[in-house]
Length: 115
Image (cartoon, rainbow, N blue to C red; front, side, top):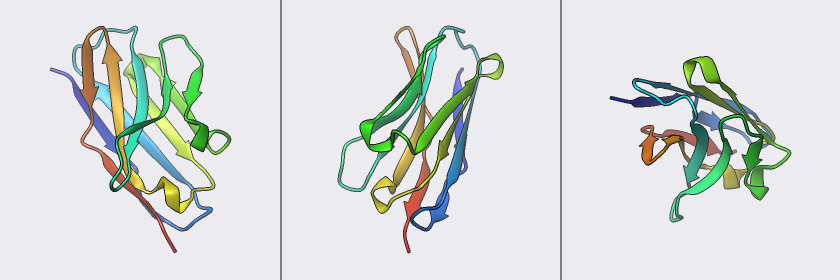
């Protein structure tokens, strides 16, 4: 059984920073993709950033230059450093683990950017 658990959400003022963490455990194929998605109120879930096994980080255009994704392959963890946050970044952020046809999601963590 695979589990994916996020942490690190919260409320921050515009221009602030937050760091999200995600840890996956269980029977996980090493050549996997880990990433972050988000769902804003009234919108569909969208890709924020991801790293394929051995690949370079990929970012949504809306977060390029502000967010940094990193991962530790040895223990299936992935991080999202979010800088210069904007109100439009307000959403529930989900960690995703993908390998083969297996697709796993965390429970989500709320990020709110507001004055």
